[in-house]
Image 1: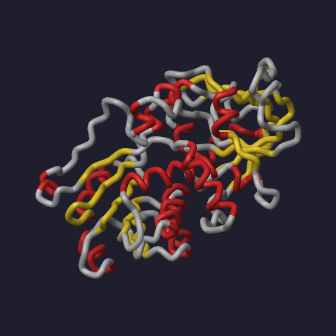
Image 2: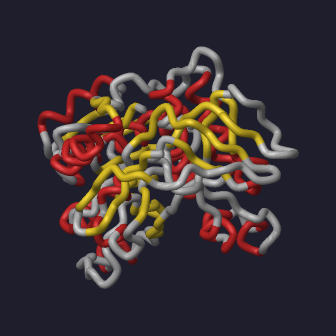
Length: 334
C-alpha cells in the first residue's frame, strides 16, 4: 500500500509500505479522508519521530475485522489515534490524555496511509460509526473539535461566560463555536489578519485586531474575560493575552512552543488578579463522543472550516498550503 512518509526537515514522500493485517479485536480501515493538524506541521515535534507516517484525523471504511472486533466490514468509522487505560490515577482524576496508555497507543502506521490498522484497545474504546448523513469532511473534524471541548471544560467555560479567543485559524473558529454551544454569553475573537476576521464574525463573535484590554472591556460590559484561549504560539500574543483576563480568570495556551523556547510573560500583571495559566493537550473518549454528537446534530457549524481538499497523490501540496497559511484547514482525500 501507499503511505505519506515524513522524513524530517519538512520532507514528505509517498512510499510503498507493508499493508497491515487485523489481529484479534482489531480492525483495518481503508482511509477515505484525513485532516492535516497543526501538530503535523511542527518540525521540532515531528522530526524526533521521523521517519513516520503523519495524520491522526482519519475517516475510513472497515475492510478487515479481527475476531471479537465490534465492527463489520463496510462500516464507515472515525478512528481516534490514542486511548487511555481508564484505571490509573490520572484517568480517575479526569486527566486521561496524560495517561501512559494514552501516550503509547497509536494507529498503524498513521492517518496518511491507504490502510490503517487500529489496535484492539482503540477499537474497543474510541472508534465510532459515522451517521449516514455526515460527510467525510465533517468526520475529520471530530478529533480537533474534541480537543477544544476538553480544553474549554478544563478552563470552565459554561453558561454566561465571557470568552476571548486569540487567533482565528481553523481551531480558533471551532473554539468560538464550542464556547457558544457551552453557553458563553459573549465571545470575542482577536485576529490581526484582516482576511481571517470575516469568518469569525460570521459565527457571531465580536472580532478585534489586537489584544487591547480597553476594547475588550468595552465589548464585555466593562469587564475583562473569564477565559482567554490562546490559539497561537506567537510570543507577543501569548503575553498580551494575560492582560485580557479578569479577576480569577483563566488564560489557556492551546498552541505549544518548542521545548526550551523561552516566552517572556508579564506575570506581575496577573498576580493580584489570581489569574490561572493552563495548557491543554489532546482529547479523551468522552470528548470524542461529545464532538461527534455536536457535529451530528448541527450544534457546531462546521461549514467553512475546511477550505481545501487535496488528493492523496498530491499530499505534499496539501502540506504546503497548510504551512504557508494559504489554507485554513486541509483535508487529504483518498
